[in-house]
Amino acid sequence: MHTMWKGSISFGLVNIPIKMYSATEDKDIKLRTLHKECHSPIKYEKVCPNCEKEVEQSDLVKGYEYVKGKYVILSDDELKQLKEEHEDKSVKIIDFVKLEDIDPIYFNRSYFLGPGENGNKAYSLLREALADTKKIGVAEITIRSKQQLAIVRVYKDCLVMETVHYPDEVRNVSEVPSVPERKEVDQKELDTAITLIDQLTTEFDPEKYHDDYREAVLHLVQEKINKEEGTTTPTDTDKSNVVDLMSALQASIERTKGHGEKPVQKKTEAKASSGESKPEDTKPKKRTTRKKKASS
Image 1 (spheres, rainbow, N blue to C red):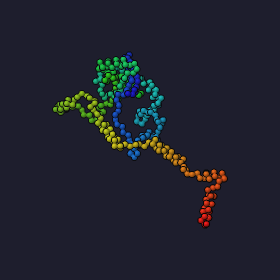
Image 2: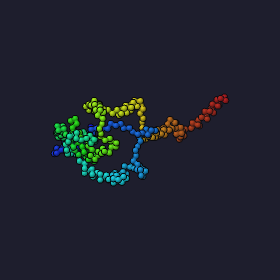
Image 3: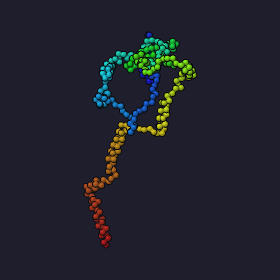
Image 4: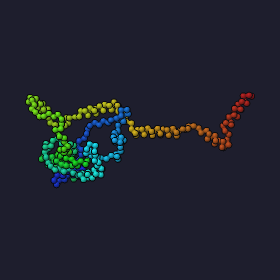
């Protein structure tokens, strides 16, 4: 399991070195958007709508939109300084509360906390104290330059930290449209609904629940793979390999031109230079001799 953060938990004068690990993972099936004609993945380029041209990473700056269409530019140096001033590698527990006191709407992400170097004893102490009192710790932590509210609790003998939304990050429920007002309902209908709820009530077993859609998509993908319906994307590497191969073949053809032909001219010149008669000088004499024999 990959360590994504190192620091410490502190409550009172107790300081516990810890390592943080992601407790959950996204199992969504990611489908790429391909060009229908050649099945190449589509690129999404950064384009300025005003200049109507593609921009490089070096041309980008960060800005905060304080009014529609108006921005305050924040430099990388300014943001780096703020990060250094507020990034504290510690989980500071400031309160202890009951878990049921916090509505689940506040919970965000879960992280496993494991003991760091020489932290086993203090880690075990906090875990047992939380388990015995049935309390959770409310803490503050900075992750990726963002200050977070969090809770620390026990989960199957492991300390778990859940990041929690601040109150102003939870939208006002009164803004939800068309929510009916609470009013008297028919008692018989209410009794029937309660009976149905009682019949369906059971202990929570997370293993019985499955993402049927994801499993169906994976099954379809596997079927297509088994039927060899996969496709290969042409890449720049493939194209360069083709060009290199063609160049190599052409060079080989040029190199082997004339291979197997007899270098007649060179041999003739060599004989002439040594005083020997040329082949053409001997052939007529042979033909003349054959004619004389024929006349006799």
